[in-house]
Image 1 (cartoon, rainbow, N blue to C red):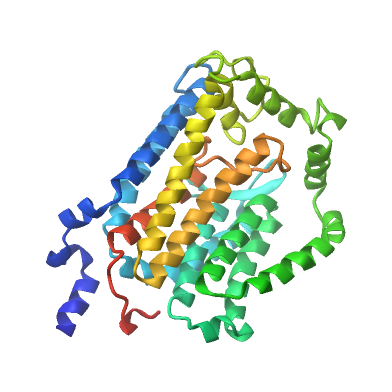
Image 2: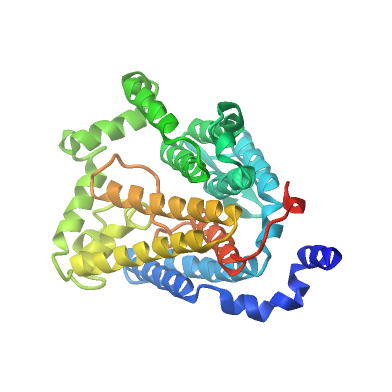
Length: 386
């Protein structure tokens, strides 16, 4: 029996008691439908951003999505215990890629964030969030309440968060660095780490905020000033957010109609295909269309949390929570940014904004999430410790 169990784990695709057909049926198809619908919204928005053309944004984006959808299904078929074995190696690879970015990365808009591997441009800071959640889940999956309450036990996890946070901050990419740290903290809280430790850290950061502000890059300080008073430089730093608010408000309840948004079609809003893509939806489909997209985003987050809640093993619960938190923060930061609720930052709206790195990272995370959902009832043994 032990030998059969070991062979089944080493050959997950040949486990006849839980074959590919059964795994395929166990996929959360409502989740897949929502993801496909969201990608469809993205295609429509990017088609509009190009003035009613699939080039140069929509066609490439939907092709990348189709390829990553296949990858998502392939990952879903792999036993989550096999994926779990690669948690720390994946994290190590992510750190190495961040170091490569610092040395050989492409510079764009004053930041080094991208590298080219095999002709494909990737942004490692997007991938490390998934790898961090997996590594922390691996570390905490058998932790007892006594261990999670002991500072020395928690310290390695804190260092695992601090390392990518510091490397991403160095690029510089403050928004993604904060999201990475938040994902790690969410996994730690779910694992049972004392919440008041995080409260103390938050208070310390708040006290040191004036000092930290002076250590920000000039463009980051400018974004904060613009956030507090967009009218201070309406044709410069404040231009994007002013035009974004105009687009959001001009849509009314039902919008100006598809391909008829004035801010969009007359190119008043820069970066409308990336950070400000939601303004196209709001302007052309109005309040009703915006709410529909928000409900779609909320449904994806809720279904990810459902997977976390129903999963019977700690590793899957923690990783699923990390993936859900990452997706939520993508949405929260981007939507708050375009509405002027927080300073502007380079955080895309997942599966809608144009860009391959964020789409790849999100779909890889969804693949792991579906593997957790498919294999939510499996049992991790001591042989699975790594």
